[in-house]
Amino acid sequence: MSTYGKKLMASLFIIIACVLGFIGHAAFLAPEKTEAEANYDATLYFPLDRYPETGDHIRDAIAASHSSVCTIDRDGAEANREESLKGYPTKTGYDRDEWPMAMCEEGGAGADIRYISPSDNRGAGSWVGNQLEQYPDGTRVQFIVQ
Image 1 (cartoon, one colour):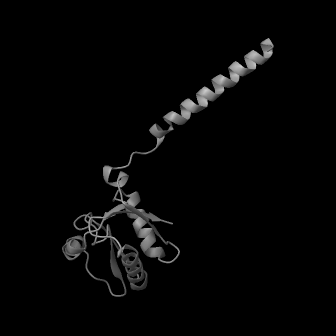
Image 2 (cartoon, rainbow, N blue to C red; image 1 turned 120 degrees about the horizontal axis):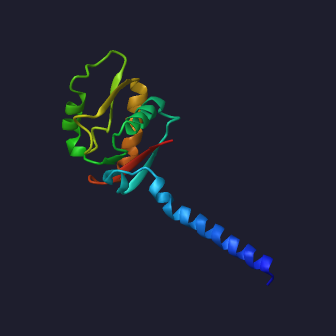
Image 3 (cartoon, rainbow, N blue to C red; image 1 turned 180 degrees about the vertical axis):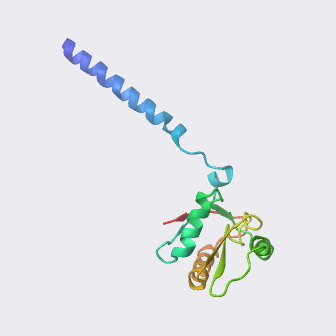
């Protein structure tokens, strides 16, 4: 092999090593997930096009540091709802939407509340309930709005 060929091979080797080194360190550039968000049993892709008000609320609440993971706790839903809605009076023509939802262990006091249309809220609630009915309490579900 000529001297030129050897230099070309050495240069290619260095370039490949640099690229692989960068890829190996790329994980350090990703934002850290909380422990709760790193561990989940299932993923639910929430349909923003079907329920835009609820989807916007979920997305905004997650962006504001509420958990994207819901640990199903159906028995705790009533108490969570009572806690989360304290201080948020009813408004004619609107429902009070909660994130995390009342049926989530993460719900309750400190949940993000938004007034949205009843049709969007109730349709979304029914849709989520149908999607999650197969899972037992304690299942950790990551929500992704798309």
